[in-house]
Length: 297
Image (cartoon, rainbow, N blue to C red; front, top):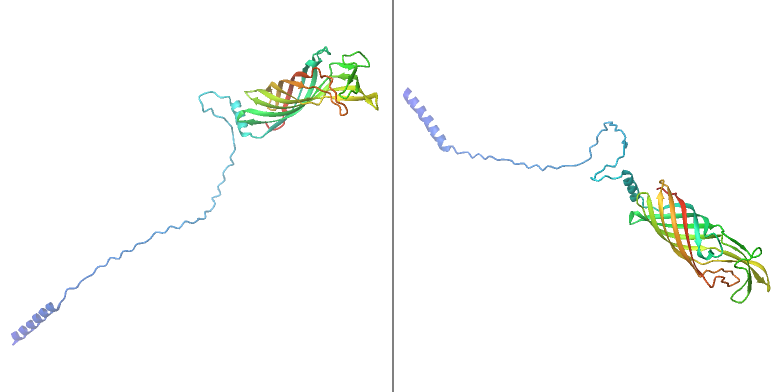
């Protein structure tokens, strides 16, 4: 009886185990991998920084020096002058004063003194062209020439004494004449600077103001003193040399030559030419002067 119960229990257990094995199913396990992609975004913005209270010393130029980079030796002063000229493109201007001697061929027969002494004052303006060494200079000068003779018909018998006649046959009686006069010169020069020397050549326009006095008719009577003056424009050339003694001072040595064509003495009321037989003369002068540069060198 006991064995029957045990057998029955064992059978039930086996049966239940077998049934359980038949009903069991295989589980499917799914494994998912999650992939996340992150985009990196950069944002640039100013970041306020706190001052560290740094104190920097002010910059000062302790020494200026031109370094010789070429194998050849270079004059530093000359190089500094060239640098100044390259940087200075403005006009330069100044004044001039001097003395001179003048020679006129038409006075050779009436004066023992061949040279005429005079003084001059002038102004000038210049500017570099093409290269720093080459410059053009425009000057305007006034000369005053002192007399080397004095002719007075009332005191002596001169080469000009006597009557003269105008184109319309009016009589003129010579009174007096001397060769003191003013001279006005406008000149354009080309200068080339080499170290302290500045040779130049120029073209000039000249006007002399000679004056001669005559007795002229008034109301058909020869009793009025009147002046006859030269009024023509002459052209010529000049040669010379300047030498720089200081940064603002230069010494000038100059030679000028020009011709006086159709030399006449004019008066508003009379048409008269006392030098009609020989009305072409040459004048030359040499002058020594000093120039002062007003603008910055």
